[in-house]
Length: 143
Image (cartoon, rainbow, N blue to C red; front, side, top):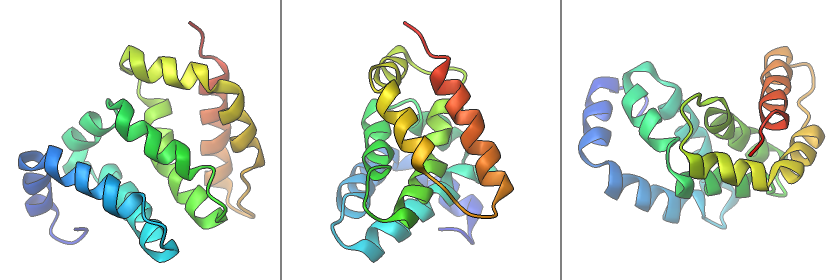
């Protein structure tokens, strides 16, 4: 999934609905720590890869997809929370958010800000910069 980028991009484009329905349900929602952690990490890598920009745009436009990283931000594992943040920030930073995404973020604004405020990763300036930017974006949301 991370080595053969053009093949994966083509596959994801053609099989988007099926692939992400299964990925979200079976891997990201798994009760197995290793499965969930590797799945959210892989998702972040796939979405951030330039060859998958169309897939990423489509993914961050879906409220069903938003719910997954939001739930994983509450996971008991700090590692899963960190990986979920890297996916969640794509939804927050999307300048062309569908109204339903904006509404979900607004409705959960105080919870999101509390979760993000508690999320710490020692000695990682890029993570802290990203987190600060996402907090600003969420705090600025209004109906």
